[in-house]
Length: 102
Image 1 (cartoon, rainbow, N blue to C red):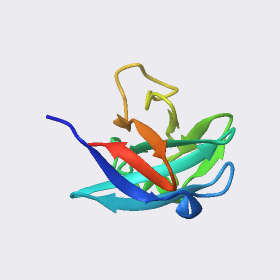
Image 2 (cartoon, one colour; image 1 turned 135 degrees about the horizontal axis):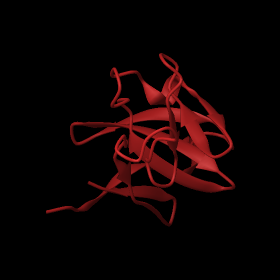
Image 3 (cartoon, rainbow, N blue to C red; image 1 turned 30 degrees about the vertical axis):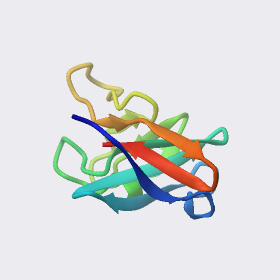
């Protein structure tokens, strides 16, 4: 069963078109801000385990720094294959807090 938990404060979110790593309840997440909206994916690339938060953001996708696999920040779907996907986590803003559904 999922629950909403505090991820961070709004002031801790990454700048526009940047990504940052966060840990919460045993999960490591890649959080990015795109067009003013925070988005979260599992930080571990499903290809070879690369740290997605260390990648770059290009055209709404996070690019893994190890092998350049691209994942849509909103859905987690890989550009090259519908079968490859990073888990996406819903975020919501509540006051000064950012909550994630784990």
